[in-house]
Image (cartoon, rainbow, N blue to C red; front, side, top):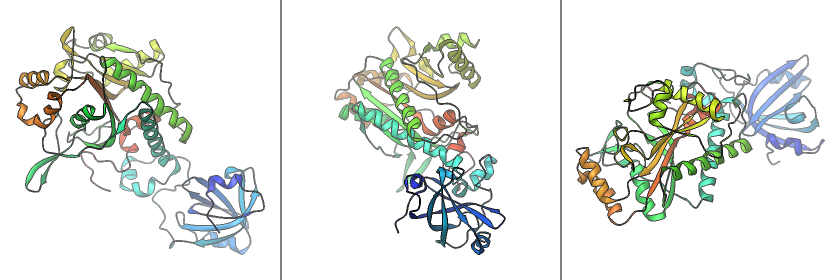
Amino acid sequence: MQRTLTHALPTVSAGDRVRIEGWVHRRRRLGGIAFLIIRDRTGLAQAVVTDDDARRIDELVEETVVAVEGTVAANGKAPGGVELIDPQITELSPPAVAPPVELWRPSSEVSLPLLLDHAPVLWRHPAQNALWRIATASLRGFRTTLDRHGFIEIQTPKIVGSATESGANVFRLDYFGRPAYLAQSPQLYKQMMVGVFERVYETGPVFRAEPHDTARHLAEYVSLDVEFGFIRDHRDVLAMLREVLAGMLDEVAANAALPGVQALPAVPDEIPVIHFRDALALVDADPDEPDLAPEHERRLGEWARVEHGSEFLAVEGYPAIKRPFYTHPAPDDARWTNSFDVLFRGLELCTGGQRLHAADAYEQALASRGESTADYEAYLQTFRHGMPPHGGFAIGLERWVARLTGTDNIRRTALFPRDLNRLSP
């Protein structure tokens, strides 16, 4: 008999015989009747066991893998409104060891250390793995939206020979006797590929060896990167980001289960924008501050919600001193840049902007920072052979899911997080 997934049971006619396979999610006894709840990748199903077989249920430890053949019967109180009666139960694995947490309980609220130490098992909890289903739907929406706009998906090296892309610390490794580094981002490569495909995107891991031990930082995370050419300025980049965010949310709403999470936000037709200098004034910060502090971001997020009815806010015009060398200066005042951060629910979600596209502009920018062009020769050749005005942005997937679901720590939205202290599991 072919396997039937639990989510398909409501479509089966009453009286038909089916076979389901999955994990023992929960056992319940009510007198001489036992209820066996089976979990597979699509949901839960209930089997009703009576007579002597009911005592056998007591021996089936939760998380044991079983096959159940039974007759479909209607029951409005059962998952999906149906259950299996007269079941035949076959164990497909040795009896499981009881997990450290009862996975059948509706809440998945466990301490972070317990979750991380037992992640391979505790991700089985329906509420916990719903987080990664949201991530999967977000990835699908990201790709679908960009494909629709004529982008090409690329994959770039994660082992690089230079640690000179930005000020962030890097992980050094031995590459056949030569020094190499784990890539901080695909930034330089995706710019190069604009010269080939015009519009590119990438999803993949990036690595930051910054000694942060906060609820918002990881040493390795999934970055959703976009770069495209023939733009007028950073506002074109922001408009494309708006389309991407809307597409991601549409896909989450259509496909992902969202037990107990915050309501999905609406993306406004245009994300409201405030200049960096005005943002500092709004939060009573020192006008010479080169960046926004977390408390500033929180207050700006609240302001955007009240003044614009938006959970998204773009802060544009960051100081040149705070942005990488490839960032395009503002045409009317080189102290500022054609760049932005987008805040989502009071926290930085992504950074983007317009890039330099002329080779001599890169040479001047590097010289002004005391850096040699020799370290960037492979990168700079792209611009010597003609590059259009271009720009892009990057979204951290785990941070996106954490903000979307109201999760208190980004480590809860990474399958196996890597941070200042953790290399296992």
